[in-house]
Image (tube, rainbow, N blue to C red):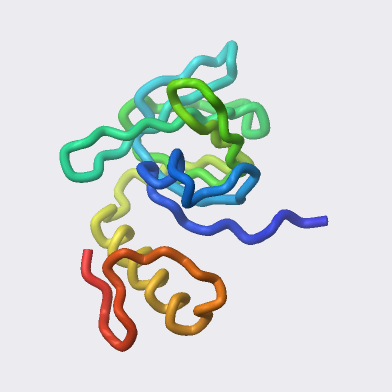
Amino acid sequence: MLPPPAVFHFLWEISTDLVKDGASVRTYGRLISYEPEGPKAILSGQQSSAQCHVSVQTTLVEPFQPTLGAQYFVLGEIEKTDGLSGAVLHARALSSVDGVDLTLLQKAIMEQRCFFKERMPEMNMQTPNCEKGKTCKM
């Protein structure tokens, strides 16, 4: 049986109650650490002035040739923990996205959320800057 489709979440949303334990998610961030003996990677992202970090379990994507400082896209499942990170992302796919315009990607994600909220209100997605009939603003 296939896992459910992954919803795009920003790094700063992953440790919140918005994302449930076991949920399939897509996200991106800058690789700041990699421990091959773990195997574990740490992705970092910034929202306003706050730095957000998410641990990524890379067992399913090994062998993995990391480039520290590069932007990576991750598809996987969330496991909530009681530790400092709050959540671990078990990667099914991990890919470098250096060269992608991340501001434009973030805007596209917000527009997609608004679209889904208008079309499928039963999904009850939390889109903070989206009003019915109006375009999204970041």
